[in-house]
Image (cartoon, rainbow, N blue to C red; front, side, top):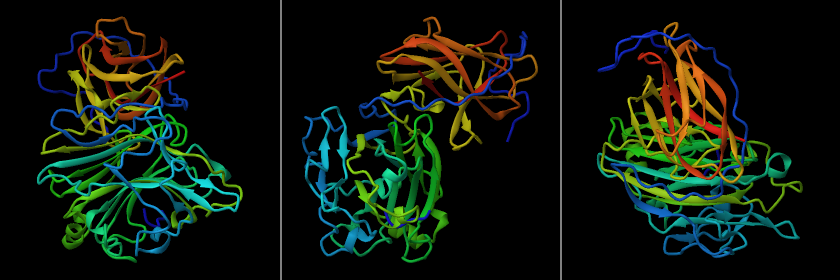
Length: 468
């Protein structure tokens, strides 16, 4: 958390055993819309590891309201620097970190709250915790995935001036030295400043200033939270460190969408080895002021509002010995944040492929009548969902179309809603399509099913979500 500034396919497709065209239905036009922002449920459990992955660390932050974190898993950083380290944590931030439950505490509903506060004299306090373990790294030829479901401090505009929440990692050799940054590596999974609807992800390495990793800015990328803003709802922030590829790479995700990747070949071999040849520890904190907020207007000042916490639902670390696919973005999925189509728990007839849609990553394609995908544990809450939105594309031939349907808990149940889709201009020509659905509350397994009067592929799906 250092100072930072910041092709369409042909109209016809085939796959093994795809059925021949035997019927034609009329093409149906598309409407476009943007899903509205809705507040996400407060608590979901860390997801069950998918096949090929093992959980090596997790904290759901369950416990009585006002209680501290479990100090077998976490340790507090206090004051304004590491002992003997750079002043103001090396970033210029102005708060003093404490172990007080006024700054770091469980909320009794399964979330950790890290809350910046200001006293009558204008002095800021906040919280910063890091894992006691420092050995998080992928096995040889395998992968490591570090993820957390977080709602950033719910404050924007002038009242957010100086806020700097973060979820990040430092190389193990930093602990006890505190002067070997950035050569030992830093992986910023989520950073945000000034209440902006932006998630920054960065790898720091090499030498400071400048060097192969452009310090102090690092090798960074950014994206925006969709569905709900980063401040208004929970989102899943993740890093996947992959030693099963050549070159080795580190990928950053927001709600399951890969928006930034750093490859080993982007720097020299020595720099990469120095940054990745060891374990890491995890850090959660909310800083106030410093170089990064300074690049976006400075702060805090008299108009900054104290008392807005970063809420952390869970932190989870998964490991794969190789070959495991990217896990779904969350276990208890939020109906009101985008659910990535490729994060299905099971499916029949569909395939994943790279997408050119905003945010990149994968879409689910080669979809024809009779195909389906299952998404377990979608949480709708107590206020009924009445709308369904899906991001779709189609390069189907003239006269080829079908229905995208939503069914709950069983593929045999009657759809609660659906919309028709035909050619959108290409298999990567994306549209957000709305549909009304019967009122839904509670938690359900959601099936996307696909119905058509003919057997040809008729749609790709990138993501979907729901609205009130």
